[in-house]
Length: 261
Image 1 (cartoon, rainbow, N blue to C red):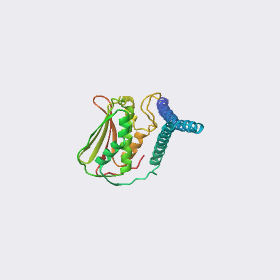
Image 2 (cartoon, one colour; image 1 turned 180 degrees about the vertical axis):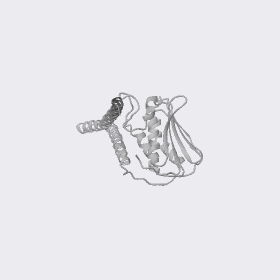
Image 3 (cartoon, helix red, strand yellow; image 1 turned 135 degrees about the vertical axis):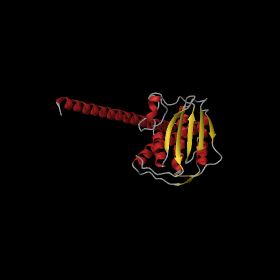
Image 4 (cartoon, rainbow, N blue to C red; image 1 turned 90 degrees about the vertical axis):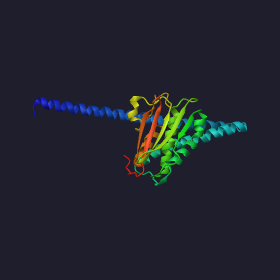
């Protein structure tokens, strides 16, 4: 090998190392942002719970109506805190291969309808209209109903975060294909910026600017992808014709179980 060829080879290796180093720096920054976001999300309900509990403790003659209001907030914030912790732990269990899976015959139409019903109050409180386009019946799937419910709740609550309050609209659609079923959750929100579409299901990613993004850990979509892929399906993002986002997943009638990566 000539000196020129050796130099070119060294320069190429150097460029590859520099690129790898930049990717590691980017991943470290994403992890830092993620940890910061999770810490903030955990601190907020804890601060609220402590402040209200101390206020009630220091004010024994507080009005009964106000006491009930404070207790309601404490319960709601405690539940929110539990959901945040569960989401972080759930992702860790799935990635470590320690998650529990229970397979049975699932009526996906009934499951989708139940998920919409359980989130109805969330949509109502924000003035968001939700529409269901479901067939009368669909063939059963061999799947884990609890995990699929988790996926549906993730997609529905994700849509509720980004649609405009008071004029938001979410459509839940289910259709049958030749060898599987497809579920779509479409909204009239701002959609996902083109630069973020390729990484929207990645860990440590969360849509929106750090200062004005909605509350949450950003783990709902990565967890949903892990679940759907484990059940032999696929999940993806589409842009709605008039703006907004449409998250969809497809599950086959005869799934091939995949190891979570």
